[in-house]
Length: 249
Ligand code: FPP
Image (cartoon, rainbow, N blue to C red; front, side, top):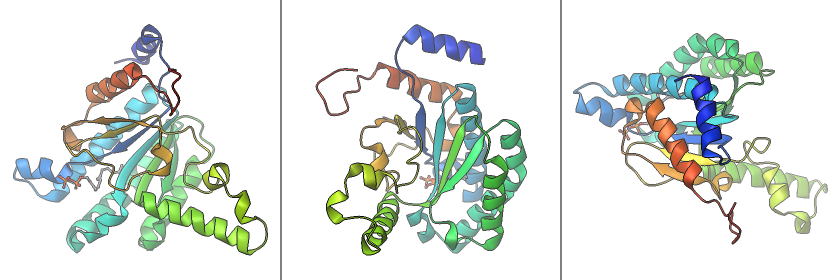
């Protein structure tokens, strides 16, 4: 589908379009199992699906796409699976970053990257630097990320400000807290999509999705495509967002 049609759809619907979509990509291993294939094949197909979603988001003119690629809890998987996922990340990042850069996409990794092998940390640093000044789609990839970790890292920074005398405890409020949480400089998350048939957040963004709309689909992540992405946005456009007030926007 062309950009022109996307824009036409937006105008026809006459509702505010989502600026920031976040996706919990779930179901790679079940996808592989159903086909009698190894987990890694599911992850490789999941990577292709992520690439499709990124280009859809770019063509749809979303401001921000945030993908949950690896949670703090995913370290509990077998060493073999974790190491093949990490190799896949490193190889794909090194291969695709020039393509992303050429499409004016800015990449940011959110999460605690200090646990990764130096090779992956270097690839991440290089990629973020290369795309830093790009102003097209903002692409966040959450790796070794957890919503609770995010809140704790923010609290630690605020506690240090208080300890060093730059902040009084009574000054702490939502705005102050927000300054330290991941993605504070970006549009708020409008829509969270989760694939794979589970109806939960699984320690993804917590603070940031207080007023996000949620869309769940049974489709396994490798089968996620433009039609499902577009349908999720159409469902979002029909929702009445109230942000806690009785006023309907
Ligand atoms: C989710 O399915 C997959 C993961 C948690 C790991 C890796 C994710 C990818 C390869 C997707 C693309 C990544 C990037 C960096 C854009 P699952 O393994 O939890 O599947 P299951 O629910 O069937 O067990």
